[in-house]
Image 1 (cartoon, helix red, strand yellow):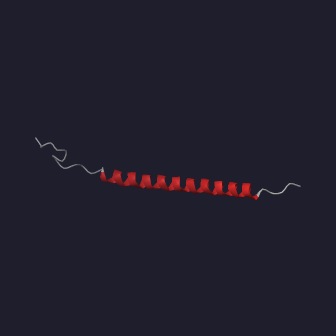
Image 2 (cartoon, rainbow, N blue to C red; image 1 turned 30 degrees about the vertical axis):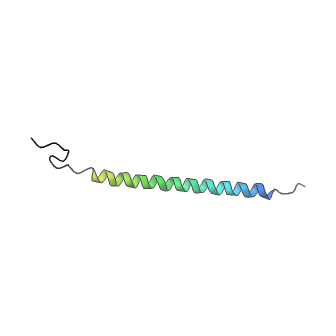
Image 3 (tube, rainbow, N blue to C red; image 1 turned 90 degrees about the horizontal axis):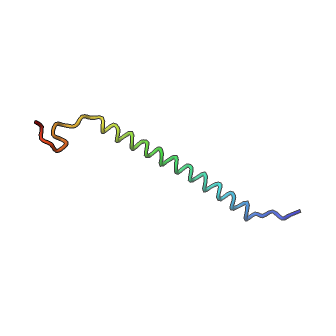
Length: 58
């Protein structure tokens, strides 16, 4: 019977762990971006003051 290749198994576990961590980080980034966009969207709903765009009101 062949001898088990523990180095290969360890490398596979490490790759699986890294992939799982990368997916978790990606989910966190997406959640942070969604929260930032939601916060930016709330601030953008207010009407600007007259002349706030740099033009004097007529």
